[in-house]
Length: 199
View 1 (tube, helix red, strand yellow):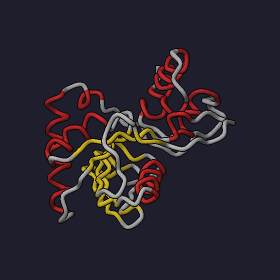
View 2 (cartoon, rainbow, N blue to C red; view 1 turned 120 degrees about the vertical axis):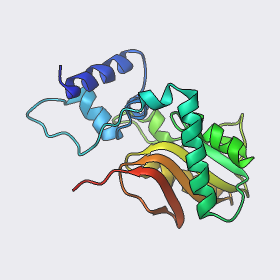
View 3 (tube, rainbow, N blue to C red; view 1 turned 60 degrees about the vertical axis):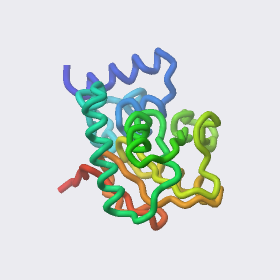
View 4 (cartoon, rainbow, N blue to C red; view 1 turned 45 degrees about the horizontal axis):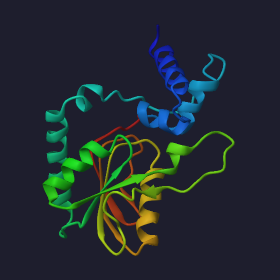
């Protein structure tokens, strides 16, 4: 079985378990468009979207490894900004574990953001993302966004807009891997441990 066939099988099994296309994209660390292609059009005669699949299981299954990644992200944040954030925003779902540890390292509150992509399905009206009511709020607060992977950058732009609408300020965003090569979002620097560059 090829790697693509394996991804198609994973995507279809997730769909059978009730995950939305957006949730499947998040689980596979690919764009929504790639997840949709895997679910509906993955044929040799159709060119897939330009994307890179990244397997993080060897990292994410170990709290020790996640803790060390969180320490590295925290170090980059402290090197770049000169203000202590009030809130670290973990982007659901995969960004939450590392964001929790970054918040602890920074002695900041933890907020959880559910992006609209998690509820996205082809043909459905786009709904807005939301902060969890059970965690810290961003209203009038200094924030840092933390996620695992940037695929397109749309989620970070969405988080930035959400924070601005609530009169908060995004100081920076920090991710493990940036597949898009984003330097900043709405004037806030984007810090990544690894940046994928296509040549």
